[in-house]
Amino acid sequence: MNSLSFLRGPLLAGRAVGFGLINASKVTAKNPSFTLSRLPLHAFSSIRASDEEASARAAALNADSEAPTIFDKIIAKEIPSTIVYEDEKVLAFRDISPQAPVHVLVVPKLRDGLTHLGKADQRHGEILGHLLYAAKIVAEKEGIIDGFRVVINSGPSACQSVYHLHLHVLGGRQMKWPAG
Ligand code: 5GP
Image (cartoon, rainbow, N blue to C red; front, side, top):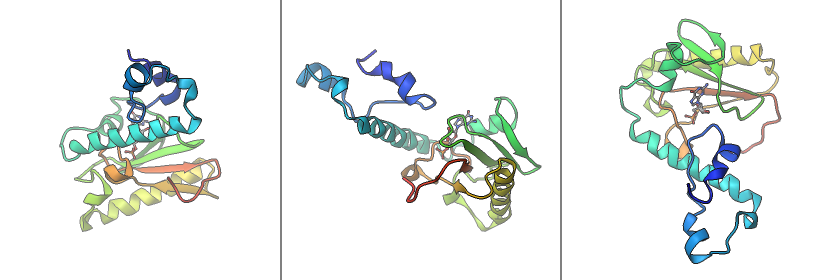
């Protein structure tokens, strides 16, 4: 265990983590007196951002694998989730690491090559439209129809971490703009 790993649970729960910006060598070699108490609070959000970027780059390496994704397992009910809406084409369930009071993922039950939006083809037009309509149904069901945000992260530069197209439906608090 390095000198920073005790922070993993409380600060970074819900994500696979690493410590890209704070190098443990800072503590041991060059700056033996360096302590966590010297870190400004914003450093921790930098740690999280750096970690998400590294995870996203790693996830992208297997983007085109035909292997079932975590979402396939949720769709097959092999992994439990809290389902908010379901029809024959899509499943909507609560995000395991919510970024807002309402944070629901809407996924196509059949991936059909849609690992990310960047792979969309003309034949996907119907399911893409259906996903957006399902997002609206979710917003209604969750009581946020007056104001909600729909996000699609596509590719490593957008920090996509699961390569099975999905919409994030976020709401229940004031959203800021521009998004990060
Ligand atoms: P992305 O980063 O690819 O845009 O979003 C993937 C989302 O899936 C993340 O917000 C993450 O919290 C969520 N997620 C990852 N694994 C699971 C899981 O096993 N269950 C649920 N409900 N959400 C998950």
